[in-house]
Every structure is written in structure tokens, then in C-alpha cells.
Image (cartoon, rainbow, N blue to C red):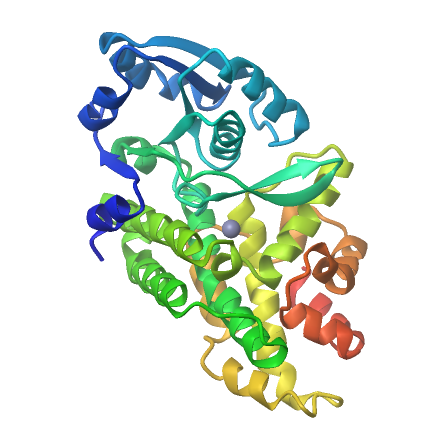
Length: 375
Ligand SMILES: [Zn+2]
């Protein structure tokens, strides 16, 4: 997997540098007005790139979200759009949320955007879609692909270990998303894109191979994980939507996210919630064949045979310090149970969760899942 040539194919400058040295990026923004988006966590990391841009003649305006963990909602998007009007380019310093805000605001303003990545925690850096919170609900909108993704391995390696684990969780999830997509193609006739799926499989195997290096805390592990996260984003670009990257486990994560928001509690990392959802999805796939009422699901049972056991994902997540039980992220039993019955309604996208709910199988599975995965 040659990440540089792949990035060029998608028109993305995925540039490696350190201490603000990103010559390709700096040349492209030279003498322009740049809006720098950061939050209280990422602001200290923005100094080198800010200094470098000013050295290249840029007029840099900073938009600081005065929170440790802002949410990509109407309020933050609006403030980014207002400040972005005065700029030629929007650069996020961050990971999931700030990147989402910058690429959506840039898309709406028809201005280029990019990200200085601060943690390898999710796969949205290179994707062309943006999940936003609207009226307390999670909605995914089209956005633009970042023009520049600036990667300083010293910064990424220094990110909290849990953020690296979350990145791995977001990639391991693809085992399930790809299977959800495949069974939807088989059962509902949804179109399936082989190229996107095989690109995603590359990301998956690159990520799986790098887990031991990540556990040992090696930089090479972080580098390979970041590459896998970028490839995952490109797979979404090829598919034209997030289908290859997001299935039942993402719907479960989104459901939980809305619960945290409604309670005004800090939201656990995307990849952490997705990792938990991935274990539930795998469990549902693997136990389907033994269930009363699963007649007619032979194609799904056959697809499940290619999936790894739950324990495979569970062991990896645990080795990286990620929660493997819902109780660990402080969500109530009642919410998790409702998630099993309601998360599939978040999007009109057929998944293993849709199958279980629409065929009445969830009633028999819910207690097992609560016993196995709650605490
Ligand atoms: Zn994700």
C-alpha cells in the first residue's frame, strides 16, 4: 500500500513533516488568509504550524473553541463558517470533531480545508462525509475531502494511548461494516463496490498487522495505523458514501453518543464506542445460525463464517487499553438495551441489527448480549 500515490490519486496532500515543516502545504497557502481551528486540548500543538504559516506570509486567524471537547453541532459549524468567510483556507488542528467542523464549513463556503492531525483516533481525515449533531441527533452530510492532511509522527505518537486504541477500534469495525454491506447487497439488492471494499480490506489488514507494534508503543505502529485510517477514508471516497466504513456498530455508537449528549456528559471517543459495537455485531453474526426463527438467513450465516471471533477483537481492544464492556463507559443498562432495539433506525441502511430487529430475533438475543457485554 503506497499511501503517497494513493493520496495523490484522491487529490490529497498527505504530507509528513515535523515541527511545522510541511513545504508542499506551505507553498500552497503562502501569502493567503488561513483560519486555524483548535480547542483547548489541541491549541498547544498548533504553535509550530502557525509559526511556519506566518513565516510563509499567511495572515492567520485563530478560532479557538474554548472547550476541551467541542461537539460538531450547529453552533460550532456556524462559528466556523462565520470566521471562515474572512479566510481563503481552513486548517483544523485536531482529530475527529475539529476535522469534521473544518471540512464541512469549508465545503459550505467553497473554500479549501485541511487538518493537522493530533491523534490517530478515527478514519474521517480523508473521507468526504461529515457526521454532525443536529437538534441532538446524529446526521451524516456530504462534505469535502481535505486538501492537506499534515502528519507529524512525533505529535501522533504522543497522543494518549486510548486515542490510538480508538483508531484501531474504528478500523476493526470494518470487518462488520463490510459484511453488513455484503449481506445488504445479497438480501436487498443494494449496490456493492468491490474496489471500495478491497481498499477497506487493505486498511484492515494493515491495521491488524500493526497492533503488536502499537502495544509496544513503537512509532512504526502509529505510522501504519495512520496510513490505515487514511486508506479507510479513501475507501469511502471511492464508494461515494460511508457504507464501507459504517454499519451496525456505527449506528450503535451514534445511538450512545446521543444519549451522552442528552445527559450533558462528555462523549467517549468515537472509536471506543465503535469497538464495543463491533463486538456486539460479531456476536450477532456468529450466533445467528443457532437461533429459532433464523430460517432463510443462510446467506448471512455463510457470510458470518469469514468473520473473526468476538474474542479476537476483544483481546486487541483490551491490549490497547480500550473498554470492552459498556459499563466501563458509564452508560446505563437501560440505554444499552434500547440501543439493541432502536439503533438500527438511525439510518436507512441494512445491517445485522436491522435483520435481527425486523425478523424478531433481537428479543431472544438481547439478554445474552447484556450478560456478555454490559459488565
Ligand atoms: Zn468510524
